[in-house]
Picture 1 (cartoon, helix red, strand yellow):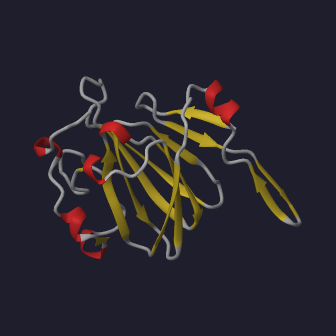
Picture 2: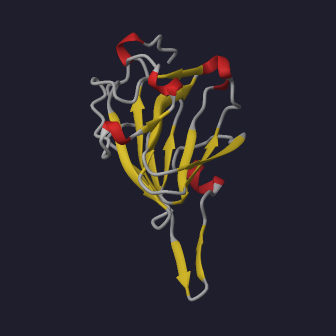
Picture 3: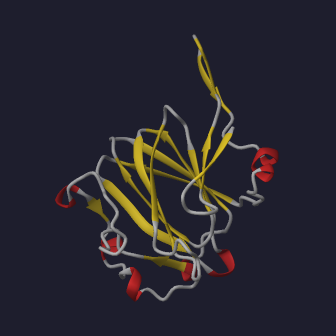
Length: 182
């Protein structure tokens, strides 16, 4: 596995080795030793999976408090634009975002530590997205920011009127109005 630093400290792209032959392929998606050797020494306590059609936008979310979540995310089928935003108070990259295309073919993962908002846009129908998380789901720790906050300046590649966004996500505050728990 290659561990690739991003412009935002602690946010890491993980690029697996893919072994292909006439039968298909094999990928190692997680290896505790390799992750620890690259500074990701976390215990994953829950796996989540979502299924989305093209144009579904989920985000921007984080979980704080006792069950603050770090997330290891990847696509099992389809393709997404995956976005993480640093909301760690005092961080030199506070409010900055990082975007990457994740798909089933390159099988890259993104490590998003606690203190980041996360969201993604499905770019293909029947997209299956998986998360390994470091904290159990805790409704009381949910925080979020509106996906189209102009201060975030995220370039979503689908026109706004074509996006499928939950009512809950449409009601999220702007970053400047959020009570930041990080």
